Length: 297
Ligand code: PRT
Ligand code: ZN
Image 1 (tube, rainbow, N blue to C red):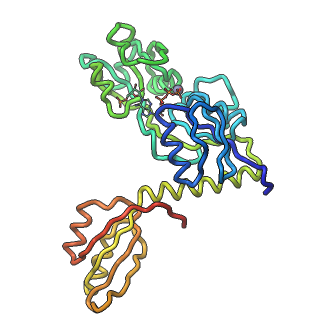
Image 2: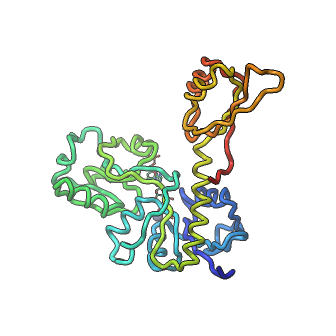
């Protein structure tokens, strides 16, 4: 591969996804100069260039091959694909879910709105910034409603008499609560994803494969734990059967204790207090659960 082949990645310049996107790359060992003002920067130790843009523009940057890949919410990609006239957007693909920026697009209405399923929205006015995804939902449910498009502060629409209900992103639900709105129907679940266009050369495809391997390693490490404990040899099999998400634990001799062994295992899922209590009840002792920084199979 020639040294000047690089991959361009579009990320959000500032906002809810900006820090998580940057952290993810840093945990992949990819460092770049920290300046939030600039549009473009070059990674120091990986063939990757970063473009900092508004999240709504990321799918179009990727569709037009200005950037070959991007990090964006599924909500934005889904909406752009449905509502933009840019046909090239259809070829933009999700390649990896990234496990951050989780939220849901929901229909919400004041507490006194009698809601009994999507049919209750027939003939109503719904305010949203997601006209594409909302129209698709209404169509699927054979509901005819008027959509009022707003760019922000959608949650105030019912209070000021602009709409009967809203369709907006929710994460904690606090915004709905302070505006006297109740979540009635989740129409789309979203998280951040790595996306790619169709314009990658073979060499750029190889860089993407390397990047994805590193990201997968970071994500697996995030959800995995390393567990260590001592166990009586007699109940080793029984104890190992309750270690969560682990294939083959390492069993080590303990100096001067022929009746006991040390067990080390990577757990591919959370280790809860209940699991530790269960291990203890079966004779395990001296338990340690530690985070894993990196993993590569
Ligand atoms: O400037 P730019 O266009 O880049 O950013 P933006 O202002 O359009 O987007 P930003 O930074 O607010 O959000 C970026 C992405 O974060 C979204 O596209 C989603 O994929 C994701 N995300 C996750 C969210 C939320 N959670 C979220 N809660 N985006 C917005 N919200 C808003 C929501 O619109 C509502 O106003 O937060 C409020 C509700 O939050 P709760 O916690 O009160 O329920
Ligand atoms: Zn935006």
